[in-house]
Length: 86
Image 1 (cartoon, rainbow, N blue to C red):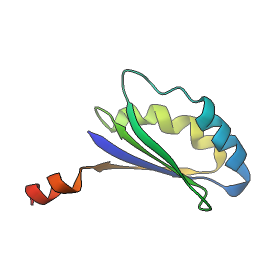
Image 2: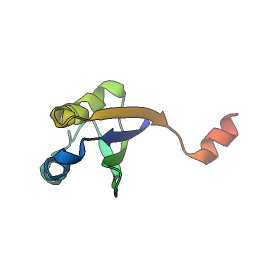
Image 3: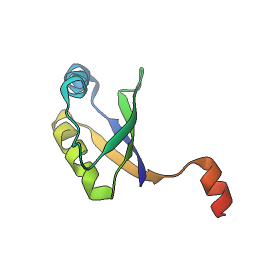
């Protein structure tokens, strides 16, 4: 399954969040990270993952929970696939 994760953090934790992303090791067997982004000036990071289910993403969101942020996860599909499915 494809997921989009967006994580909004408190501005005073920006440095800690960036350091955590810099050194963070993703669970190799559960999650395939396709892309990561930092939304400049928004105090948000976004990542696109492939994972077998939502529970796999808890391994990624939990380490960031102490920085005053909220992790949002939503399943996603390419627009072309969604159009065909409707």
